[in-house]
Picture 1 (cartoon, rainbow, N blue to C red):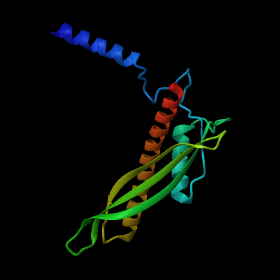
Picture 2 (cartoon, rainbow, N blue to C red):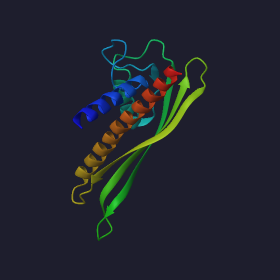
Picture 3 (cartoon, rainbow, N blue to C red):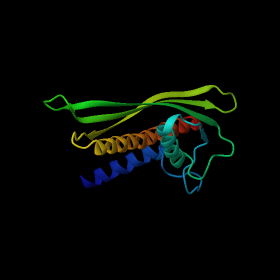
Picture 4 (cartoon, rainbow, N blue to C red):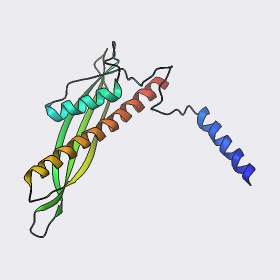
Length: 167
């Protein structure tokens, strides 16, 4: 029985590697870090700057590519909604929702090659006694949602670019 399990596992591993499967976070061609040929356009407002910095750190850690294949444009919206309500109808918990609309353009033709809408949600507790702690919690939740959004966007872009390279 154990022999059958080992043989099945080995066959499964061979099938997965032969279908072209490879991890997205592993550097290719001996590079020390993963770099994506994307120029990230400027994003509006302070939240946009924070998101762009996260994306630059993830997608182009060694600096902007000398000849990018794509230009990434992002429009960002943020909303704070009440999700927990006390008996006196004051909020006890809120959600910070950040939504991004991605547009990826080809640098040479300026045509849209990929669009996607994605969002990240992070919640935080509201303490009605202290306004400063509420404001700090809201800012931290929004910043964490931006970090999560940057990770989602990077996975979407890497997956798209990998699929284009295989074609």
